[in-house]
Length: 125
Figure 1 (tube, rainbow, N blue to C red):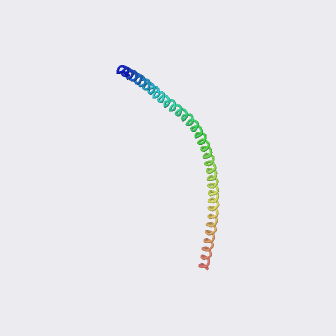
Figure 2: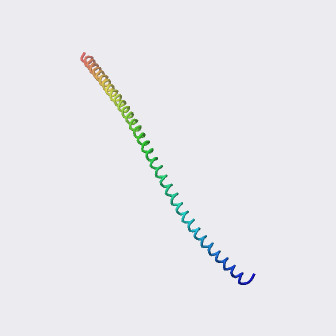
Figure 3: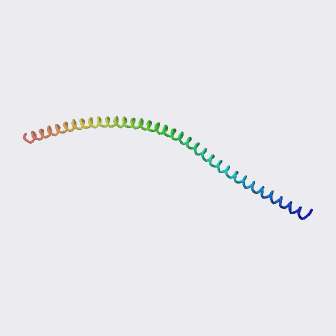
């Protein structure tokens, strides 16, 4: 193998290496671009999925909150009614107690008056 033949083969090999390097760079650039596109597509799909799921969850949450509000409103109504009943009973009990206290006060007053009248008779008598 001669020097020229060897030099030609080295030139051909360098040319092939350069060609492979250019193709490898192009393939790498294409692969990088594809990876970036895939990343964007995946991110967009995940974002869209999350938005749909969040909307569904928000709807569910609104429904639960409405239920809780209705339950709370009902409980408050029951407590209001019970409080009103207790207040009515307390008021009736107070009115009864006052009437009974007046009766005792009148009885005591009459008894004091009768004793005073008795004492007055004893002193006169």
